[in-house]
Image (cartoon, rainbow, N blue to C red):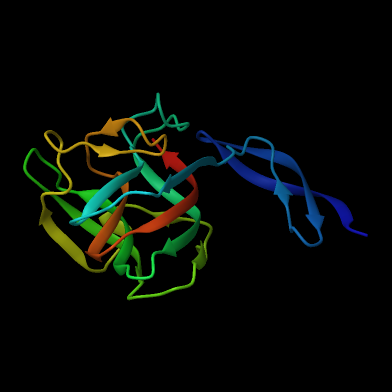
Length: 201
């Protein structure tokens, strides 16, 4: 049986410190509910039955689009969790990459790596779950250091819109967007991604 206990937390709301009553639940979930805490937003993306012939990009989170996506703030994306399943064809070869964009203009943009799945040639489905240690991955270069694919024409503000989670609407790229990059070598694969996130002002 789970143990429920009441605790007092100090929280900062705006510029004023207030006491917040919270309920914590000890058990399998370790769920913590705090009044005033903004719930996460979520997206689900899937692509399949597509024959690729070159590298291709897909929009997971369009930071500036707060009408189609569930978030409100448009400052930056903080990724909380990412689940991915790749079901490759027998002859698929390539890498599956997730990253965030910077320096995007009408001609190209920079892809900043969050994670890469090196698929090679596999016959089995591949499943992975990413959970970030402090509860989030901040998608900005002030809090990130790693490889960059610079000046890629896949990511542009115009002339090369990419499909988003609904599978039918194309979106222009911009700074701070979270994208999927199929670094294609051969054949095709089915890809499903669930992503939980917050956005900051």
